[in-house]
Length: 323
Image (cartoon, rainbow, N blue to C red):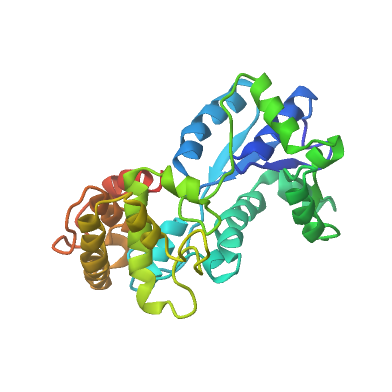
């Protein structure tokens, strides 16, 4: 597509079933987007494994694609942080969905995509000439997405024209699964953070030990500030507790001694790391990802200065922690 002759088209890829099928079908119809954007998130392991697989598919089929990431502007006295996991641990809280809100998606998914598009020459040229950027969203015709679409229907933007190709084609969830299978690709599932309130019991049971430990850490770090909810699952139901940590303990998914150790010591260790960072100039502070990396390795961090590694090491460790 030649973005100079008509409004540029950008597709939002969430690494789930619907948006993946949308991109495949666009390619089949000869309607390749000018750009496809994925917001970096702490995804479930199965999604993390599939992201490079489908990015390679897009590269092979001439689909431009980029991964974008939320970049905070001010760190105050904190170690630098990036991902939603980083932000929650830094601020001692849980993702906003645990409190019945949805700002985590707006901040960590929509905002970095908007920022990328605003710096995109094709978009700047379109806006300068009175055009809107076409933004493609992967809502299908199933009952769940009918609700999501109803919430969005009629939304007007000065910068974007929103289109929903799957709905235009009459695609259901089953159609999306079929399109992916026809390409010989692995099955894509729901995309979400591994600590999302929307996680099902079966999904938590399937998580590896590393993710389970991080869930325990998140809830332990946030516990002093929780007043109206029990944890990431908010409130207890007949099927599960409001705390994912309580579920992990009850199900025996982690050794009880490991859970007790994390709850008792990890939040304090992280606070020590943050206090050390406050005494270091911002350009020399280690990213919080360095602390997470050591937590994942089962190592104490409080004795390590907040500027213990150089910038290149910091970047590599941060990427490993997020991925």
